[in-house]
Length: 68
Image (cartoon, rainbow, N blue to C red; front, side, top):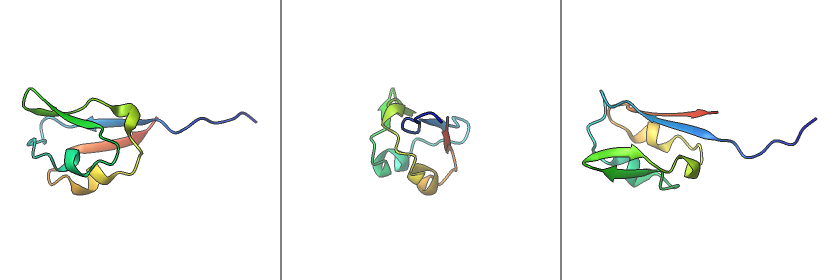
């Protein structure tokens, strides 16, 4: 039986749905998101806590958080 490390999370933003409203960025406790060249990007994925708050607050359902 091996020792498991911390969960790793993959954050995806569906660019076809995202309106760059910033709801995910404002609600994220891990500061995963940043505005880059006018678009919200998940630039600090290693900071994701896996709380799914971004999914809950996104009005366009553009955020997805999956365990890797």
